[in-house]
Length: 277
Image (cartoon, rainbow, N blue to C red; front, side, top):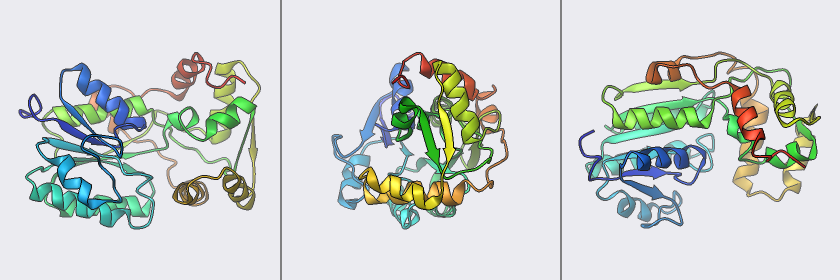
């Protein structure tokens, strides 16, 4: 991209797991970045469309990470409206962070394609970092993770790999019109993942399978925002049904290397003692 040296890349969700890492990579290469968030300048809020136009003025491309998740009903319409506005403003380079096995996420992808943008889609598996930068941190530190999911294999993908891919597709030619499905290099059940974290942390951390009703009650007790509580229930009761028990080569196609293994993530993250009680 020849405009990135003077025109910033707008990162929506720029303080989130992938957006923050992408911003770090772009900044390290001397490429200008604009963080799109409710605390950003100019402010960006998905729920206030009047903030979209000012935030996108003068940018060369947009990385779209939707809050709280593309699985939420109505997300596709919002993505479509944003993409059309961007194209109307002359910003055609749009990269969407999408989710595997989520019908609403796939609808968002179609809305993006229909906007006339020069699109790239990064369809991602469950992030490894959900264990260290999300609601599971507390449970891991306490020594027991209770979730309504059985022996289903999930190809956990590292957020650093996602950020590396996002950086590549935004700064190199040849990625327009491409859908990259990003996974880690192997399948692990949630019980497997918790066991690897326990081993890396040098602790005995138990995984317990609970019913959907028990999980719903636990989530409600945490006093989370309604949309986040709904999302957790949706992801654990619908998406984790085995539909994503396949590995893909998206990371290899973009970066020319193997994706990071979950054990590498667990070992490096355990060193920060975030899972220590």
